[in-house]
Image (cartoon, rainbow, N blue to C red; front, side):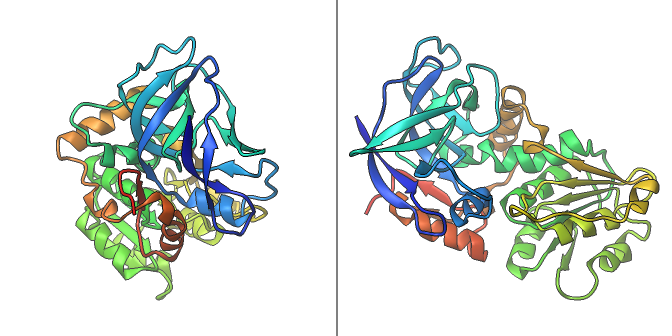
Amino acid sequence: MKTQAAVLVELGCPLVLADLQIPALKPGQALIEVAVSGVCHTQILEASGYRGQDRFLPHCLGHEGSGTVREVGPGVTKVRPGDAVVLSWIKGSGADVASTVYGWGEKSVNAGAITTFSRHAVISENRLTLLPAGVPLREAAMLGCAVPTGIGAVWNVAQARPGESLAVFGVGGVGLCAVLGAGLGGCLPIIAIDVSEAKLDVARRLGATHVVQAGVGDVVEAIRATCPDGVDIAIEASGRPDVMRQALRSVRVQGGRAIVVGNARHGEELTIDPRELNQGKRLLGTWGGDSQPDRDTLRYGRLLAGGKLHLAPLTEKSYRLDEVNTALQDLESGRALRPLIDMAERV
């Protein structure tokens, strides 16, 4: 059986559509018919060469999505053929099968435990979670990365409490999910920071009580105009080291938490004033919002199905698979918040 996929052949070049031969499933793998794939800044970093040397070229891309199980390999018990599932790079329970190799004529194409820029994909069992009831496949794609990373950074890592003040630096897909998580968690005020007025407008719609346009004056001073002692929590979702420093500067002494979510480019370094840490501030990292798919996908899914998690403003723009390069360009330029590749859409 063959499938169509977008393949990264050379760094800094557009992805190439290819008809790939699907290999026999290994123990612990499942064949998924992908319905919708999200597009994340991580793919921009990968495709542009901003993550350093890539020894796996050519390879498939994509790490969040939704779909239907078509076949399972030996030993798979978590899902069955016909199940609707969420696809996530965040590991859950089940077999951990690191990679697979597709055929492309006389060539081989590598793939990790999960890839989603294709109509069908071989996925490791531990990257699959049953789709919560009442969640459409379109919105479900964001349960694979943006939602667990953004909301998880607020709930699991910062452990936000009702009434705590929170600032989000960078309100793309993940940052906007952090804004949503802050609102659901009862944070107040919620301050959104971004260079884009359009993104700040969406942040307001999703619950931000205050906005600060970066590049217009001192961001930290603007935050302190609302919270004179600094915010309790800062979520950094831009991937820029200078913004990570701003996030740490913006939190209050003796207990303020700055959580770095964004991925910096390969070779970039973060320098901070150590006195910030001596003041009792905390600088924290996170791996996918510290979310656990087997626990949290159901929790986020119930909020989505119950109308409490409003993802529509993030998922308005969808693309065909053959438009994947346009989706990447629109994400990088800010023309799209969280592009979705809808496999049902064809020329």
